[in-house]
Image: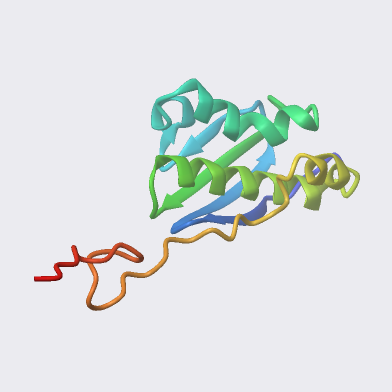
Length: 131
């Protein structure tokens, strides 16, 4: 695999969408035209983003350009993690069982429940008064 084309993948989590463009390089991850270490403030989020690359021993082998949209900082990091995992599986199918065992190939289906009419939140009810 000497000449590698750009691989693009999509990852989602809650309302966050990560579109990534991955090509062979020296491990630069650029999120919305900023370095990912600057974009994600905590080391936990850095770990979440690097997780699929670390599990497959690919840290520092690919340049990744990311467009992140919607959601919060945590959802965005997890959406990016899914996108990177999917892109790695496109490059080499043998990575799939490793990533799947750690649950990185699964789109987390948990979404915010909608607010219902006649109550203040999704499940909370207004205070009941007997008299």
